[in-house]
Length: 265
Ligand SMILES: NC(=O)c1ccc[n+]([C@@H]2O[C@H](COP(=O)([O-])OP(=O)(O)OC[C@H]3O[C@@H](n4cnc5c(N)ncnc54)[C@H](O)[C@@H]3O)[C@@H](O)[C@H]2O)c1
Image 1 (cartoon, protein in one colour):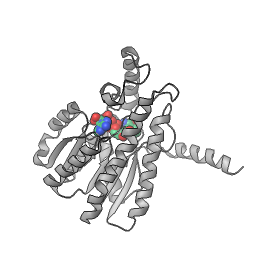
Image 2 (tube, rainbow, N blue to C red):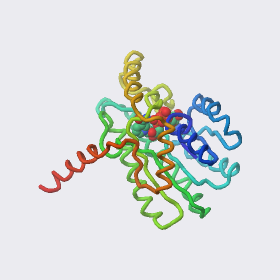
Image 3 (cartoon, rainbow, N blue to C red):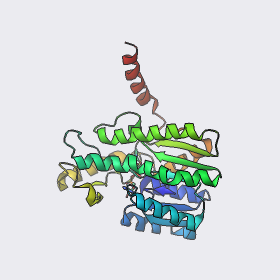
Image 4 (cartoon, helix red, strand yellow):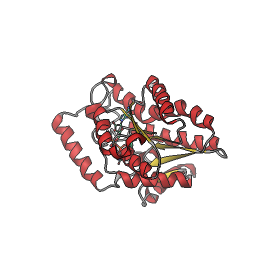
C-alpha cells in the first residue's frame, strides 16, 4: 500500500512493486493523479486497487484499511510516502501553511502507522514499513523550515519504530531522497480548501517562475521507477535509511561537524 501513490516516487514504486510480483494499493488525495495512475497501471488489472485518501483524514484511513483487507487481506508493505514539498519563509508563512505542511508530511505518516500497525503486527507475516522523509529530514532544506521540521519527525518515528520492531517479522526503513524527477513542485494548486489559501506570494507569474525552476532542477534527479527499485532493495536489505543519491556523505558530515563543534566546547 502506497500513499501519495498516484504520482512521482509513489507511482514509480508501484510499477517496481508490480514488476516484483506484489499486488499494489494506491492511495492518493488527487482524483486527476488517480485517473492517470489507473491508465499507467492498467496492465496490472485486478492486482491494482486505487483509493482516494487524504492522509490527514483519520476516518478515511479506517475506510481505506477496511477496503484493503476486504480486497487483498494482509498488507505486507506499507509505504507512507505522501508529502507536499512546499518551501518558503517561516516568517512569511501563514498559520495555515504551518498546519498543512506538517499535517501531510508528518501527521499523515503517523496516522498511517497508527491505523496499520495493529493490522501488520497482528497478521504475524513478514512485512515492512517504509516512510518517505527527505535529505531535508537530515539537514534543513533551503527555505525548508516547516518542511524539514516535519521530515525530521518522520526520521525520528522510523528510528524508534525500528527499535521496537527489532527481532520481529516486521522491518522499517526511512527513505531520504535527494532530487527525484516528480510533480513535487505542483502542490500549491491542489491544496485542500480546509488548509486555507496558498503560501504567500504565489501569484500566477511567481508560481510559474518557481515551478519552472523546480522542474529544471528535478529533471536532473533520479527517475521515480529507479527510486522504486531502491525502495525494494532497501526493504530486502532491511536498511534503516534508503538514500537515492550516492553523494550524501558531505551533507551528513556538515551537520555532524556543526553538532560536534558545539558539543566539544
Ligand atoms: N521529488 C523529490 O525530489 C523529493 C525529494 C525529497 C523528498 N521527497 C518526498 O517524496 C514524497 C513523494 O513526493 P514526489 O516527489 O513523488 O511528489 P509528487 O507530487 O509527484 O507525488 C506526491 C503525491 O502525494 C499526493 N498527496 C499530496 N497530499 C496528499 C494527502 N494529503 N493525502 C494523500 N496524498 C497526498 C499528491 O496528490 C501526489 O500524487 C514526498 O513525501 C516528498 O516530500 C521528494
